[in-house]
Amino acid sequence: MFLETYETHNAVIDKKLKDKVVVVIDTLRATSVITTALVNGAREVIPVSEIEDAIEMSNRLEKGSFLLGGERNAVKIDGFDLSNSPLEYMSDVVKGKTIIITTTNGTRALKKASSSDDVVVGCLLNVSAVADYIYSQNKDTLIICAGTEGKFSIDDVITAGAIINRLRSKTSFESDDLSKACYFLYKSFENNIMDIMKYGYHLNRIEKLGFHDDIKFCTTIDMFSVVPKYRDGVVKLI
Ligand code: 3SL
Ligand code: MG
Image 1 (spheres, rainbow, N blue to C red):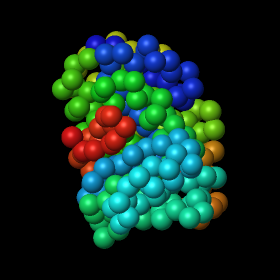
Image 2: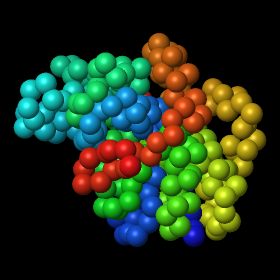
Image 3: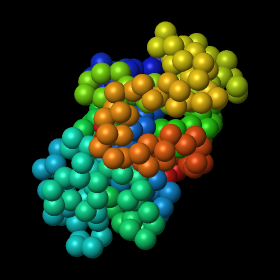
Image 4: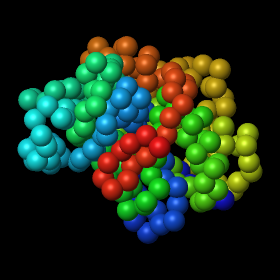
């Protein structure tokens, strides 16, 4: 097995995805939101890139069966039901609903991965479950960090390192330099990941916007033991 990590989705090309397990990470906050919504009983999550696509898709669904969620510039989109805070995706709100979600980086990273038929959603909330999944598949694997505005984001890279750390405890494998860098960075801070995450640009940006509780939630390791899978345009729990 060979493991490669991409610091953003921009450098990923379709032919790289063929026959691989692909893990898409946007810890702050899109993949944490998707995972939380599914754990809390959402029927499915449909990631889309553009606001217009989300609205157009919602027009094709039965009224009351869906919720529109996501963000632009980290805040709720006008006319949408939910923002991109995982704390809004509790069971009394999302149970049984289809969630159509569009975010700046995370849903675009997922769309980018969609030519693989084995795409899973990762975040700090489910690192051990994702590592177990990669191990069970025993295939070459690509970790795609969503990144922030086209750049490396510490929160995603620490999450990749946490997954790789757990995978290393199960099996040996070859990997590229960024996978090794993610692993060693995570290892240096595994006793308190906030000691490094607190320097992240995006974390500080959303902290200043008042999303402290979201950060606390999204940086909790292994809150859930689930693997959301993205197939045929829809994310569901395996
Ligand atoms: O970029 C994204 O996809 C979002 O998760 C970013 S934010 O944390 O909601 O601003
Ligand atoms: Mg992010």
